[in-house]
Image (cartoon, rainbow, N blue to C red; front, side, top):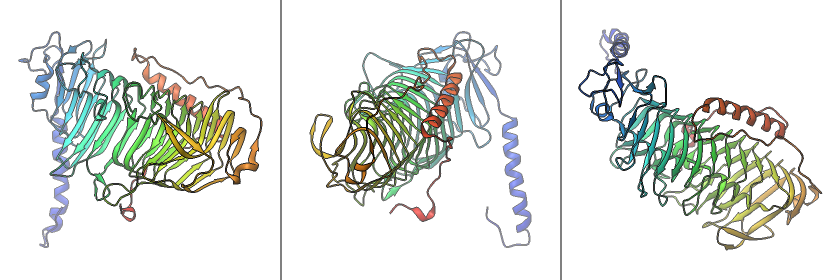
Length: 519
């Protein structure tokens, strides 16, 4: 608001907010509900009552929806066309799409018809919930279950994707920018980002290549325009061709209580369960990542390149082919990569992860691995802490007050060679520098421990009986999903408290301050 210097300036200051509030109230009061029924609808009908619905999703796409309008799709309806929203709501009056009536979820089958099943395209203040979406075809192509896309739009606000059942999306596995739910902010002409985007309580099952992924183009050290208030929470992501959940180009993202199982199932190259890249202040907490199938990376969790102050807190990683946690970045340069700085992994539990429990790859620094509990099963032979080369080596890594409970064998060292996806290692961490161990507890068999840890070994070790029966859910049936997620969260909290010996206290995300600008 601009205040004039005339004697009427104060009156203008008081009056303008009244006009804005009045306009918002009027818009909400004039909002309309539209009904769509694939069996009984007619696109020439008014659409404003359940007995005079529209028939097609094209009618929704083409209609000039207004802030506050609601579109209700009839249960049991089925369309072979996409749902595309290009109109914007406003703060307090979003455009919303949801299901109504008793019966099966409204279903969109977009295979062979559209690249996306649901698209929110250059629109803001939009909510979509309660639908079933597929995008299958005999031949792979770049496909999306749900695509949220903003191009040359500046700040795009207030988007919600929730309670969706997304499955059988046959994307291509040689590119990461397609799959179940993709949010993409790009702008060659105008820097573009999302603000207040929430993806929660969705089932994403049998999709290629990515489960839930962010795409951004203003992510370099000198061209930084990150999305803010991104929340990815309470989602089940299972049987994924490549990566499970991957935000990109964000500041202060919250990735909380998601379940990623059987990622890396089909895609070539390097994949992991839950990770981020080119982000600041990502908070990854209370997630389960399990059964990642590839050994190219293949960890349950990863803190990746051009990122600062990633926190992994209260997560459960188990039975991943590549291990628990990768912290990595190629060599730093001033143009597009600051390396990986300030990753913290605290109060996590890993059980029966294979190959590499903690991998420090490339230009990573100021890392704290603290108060985690690691279980290595009988007969397993793993690299507990391994430093590997990626255009450089790690430095300044503190490994403090962890419990390493090894019924098999755990090894420590640095890369001496490769054999396909596996690393050959030698004793000692050089040329990585300042990899420091303090006050850890080592049960069982440990090979090539650093000198400062050698006196802390407590042999032998046998697995102790405990409740490791994490709740499971059949994604072929979407019914009962909210109850399952509640059971899963309760089990996670109880398991973490048992393993850590203290109450679980999740954190809230933070964003960058003006004193922490990228430089």
